[in-house]
Image (cartoon, rainbow, N blue to C red):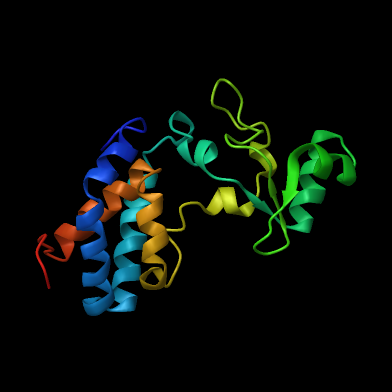
Length: 170
């Protein structure tokens, strides 16, 4: 599997091929079959993988938080909800919700640990969403995640083999 430090470079090298693969899947893949492949590969590859040794997602993305998550994390940190929002969050102009202010994540320690691991937001828990249904409709996001997450990169490479994809015009 590609290393966390090399995943962006490796993904950029395959960017055109991955875009063609996305089009290939959009035109040929059965939604339920593709979801089954994603789920199987997700479970197979994430079980042995230690995300704590990577944390690229924590370094590259802002995290969205719902009201219940804000309340839980502020309580966990011993802060008022308003103080927590002022210290760590900003409004997301796209959806009007809250997201973390900084990249890398303000809860990522220098040692690569998450300060709020016990109550981290669902968007952190669920990333990269490769075990969720209807992946056919989020393939563009998956291609973006392959630039950040070595496991997603590997899932795409294995899907190319499963679907006998060859880099050519279809």
